[in-house]
Image 1 (cartoon, rainbow, N blue to C red):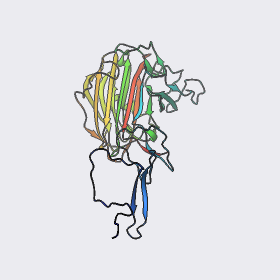
Image 2 (image 1 turned 120 degrees about the horizontal axis):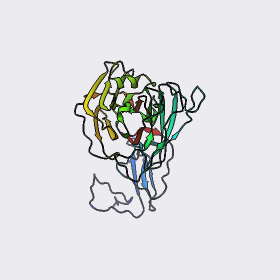
Image 3 (image 1 turned 90 degrees about the vertical axis):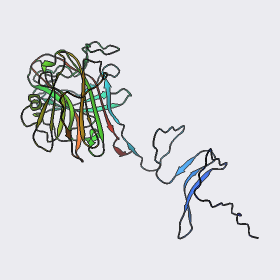
Length: 358
């Protein structure tokens, strides 16, 4: 009589086991070609725990490796969800490029000249920042460094942080625009509507917010810097130059306002009917979902990055179009006053990260 089990194979239907499944000499997963009967191993685990896959390894959730992971060929990864997570207490001072413009003097920069910064983050990561000068800085610009007495714990009244006032002491309508994580054209700062969502959260402190025409955060479509943008949104009147954007913050002497534009259409300026306190902290947050829907929240007189955020009393319904590529941007525009505007904390997250091949 023929031994039908002589090759030690058992052919089973789909089987579910409850509890541990043990194999002393390893496990092999294979498939069999229907036309030739040739067997091809697709995954193996040997008795030492060495594992090999010939297909895609997908991991959902946390994964812990106790030894080396060897990869043959290209490795496709996602960028971290945190683009930047910085504050003036737990992180080092940002590194600023040489602020020598076409005029040749340190700190003297023409309207539209570029500079860059590197922000050391809480986990040791470095975030590049691209900046553009707004309005001619005719003397050595003030700020661009963390100043004041740095406490162990922030308070609403702590006048310290990264001073972004620039040449405000001697020039009216001067300031800057900053793009975190990439450039004005996108790069690692990109948020593609339809794919990614992004949250931009920042806490500012000023001795007198009425000295600031524009202290705002938001998202704009990736394009070249336009230095005429900030004066327009500060005045809440005129063509804001960028074709698609949302900006939320102090717009026109301590008023909390929203400014938006879609598809090069009419610029909308919405007064929230709220204002910052005369001095102290104010935290702003702008969120864009992967569907392009934008929401706004803020809180005043609270510890940096803390407190219960709330939507403005009067808000604006706004959505970017699917496929739009936007970048997170920060705008500063000051009046002719020697008044520091301190950035105390900034955090930007994008979900999911951007896929790239290493």
